[in-house]
Length: 326
Ligand SMILES: O=C(O)CCC(=O)C(=O)O
Ligand SMILES: [Fe+2]
Image: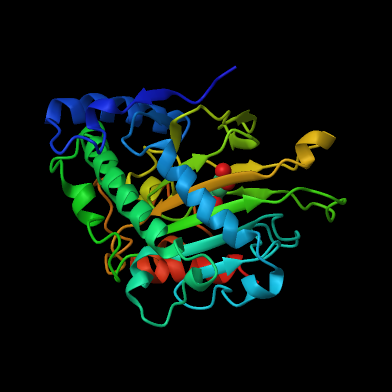
């Protein structure tokens, strides 16, 4: 039975202020290899502690436990920032929305005075989330530097440079805190915790709790479990990076079914995702390799090759959000 590879990220962890190229290359090679087949890898010893994940989950849990009318005041309206109630996100046409709730925070939007943090109900919310975003940015840049070596890019800082605007206003990177509530009554037909999908951007850092349920789809169509590993995080390739690497790295579909066992149904699942995106003003057409893509282009989210060539990263992302939210 295949299983998602584990990479010890310690030599490149964000607790080191400087990392030698040889360390980036060693870790990058292993990550690259995992990404070719699985599109996913576990990273151990990244320098982001489980305590900081727990702290974030604690403040967001305080928010999620508020009555619906309180949470409704923070619905996601502008800049992909705010609360999404159960069923809001529809990843598969014609199916009910996912049985999950989430709080989404586009990092750059935190500079917009019109966005509303729920700090009046949970005082530490924005402080904790912003501090976590900074750690995610640092880790994402390290991963991108390692990956540049893994991909043997001529310019080993190219990937991190394309993403250096993370947390700024011209970048769609975002932090999403997810809560999968207990299932107390039968769900709607075809409703599950998280419908099968691929992520839109470059990479996703995923901090899941120990409950489990996430599955990834292998090339032969079978699913394998992304079994939670204590203190390890999951890292996966998203669509834009698959495209930019001309398919060298795989953006792997993933999903979370609804548990069938009674005790598991009652167990809440928590996760935190950090979606890493490049600068919005870049053209989607700027790939990292010169192989001619037009011949073997597999559709990126329903867009034809010609349509895609016209778009900036920001415009491309806008088309995706329109598609998945009611
Ligand atoms: O909750 C999880 O573990 C996965 C979340 C996810 O895949 C997503 O939000 O894109
Ligand atoms: Fe995802």
